[in-house]
Image (cartoon, rainbow, N blue to C red; front, side, top):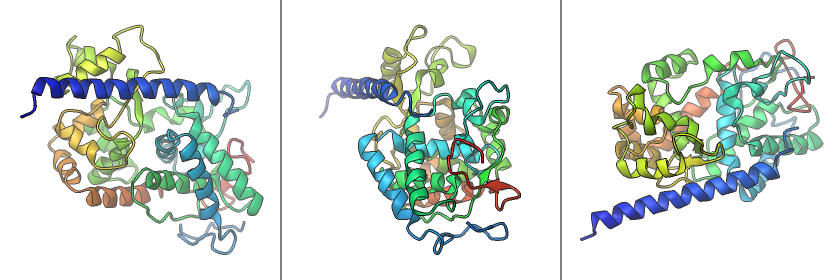
Length: 351
């Protein structure tokens, strides 16, 4: 029979090693990529899987070559690109407006400069830029940045062990990108389930979509500031959140002190299989191993708990639900035609 004390220590040290390793890698990656961020009118057509079958038939293969290369070179590109796609779609639709950079000296800031987007990993932008450059060399002026982002996100889901689903295409790039539009449209770590349901509902997404899309946290990492209050001052009590496992609490407090900690330290959303797109995220919530308050709340709330438990029992169900939710999210606020959109050659600059 295993010793529970030894098991607890083993869990603690494994998690601590993951956090330290990821934090070092993230800091190195930040230094490496410090300077990285510097067709016909389809207005009458719905999104279609074969939208580019004649105008750019190899678009999927071209983008796949870049995403595979980026994933091998910098695995962090996977969760960061999926997050980038989410942040794009939830603010005025899936139109690549999150890729636009603000004009120097302008007070009218673009989405990218909103506070909630400050920690978007640079690797995601590098990947989209590389894919766009390659696609433009083969099919100039045909494929939108918005479609490249949607396809890239799907590719990274699949590369990390998640499902492969068909991506419908035909999006145009949005002509507007405003930082002021971001805050009220992106979920925050301390949102209540009521607030999440309301926000997702405003995008045409239901309760199951909410829980399924949250499953993207099966990979990726959170900065300490996202969950610090859970560790030290839950709901103003000056105590830790009682819904967090004591072993996890101890490990996170070691890496994330109450004050004076490094802004670059991160912890994996999924503390058991942080690099694999699987259902362990939901199983962790049942075991009180959720990192963000919003994640753990999905299990404590009676409306979302049954869905968490369902998806945590069957990996195929999770993958199916996630694929369906991604298709729905990818259709939010789609722009079509020159009247509402553009086909940018440089994804960071308007035409």
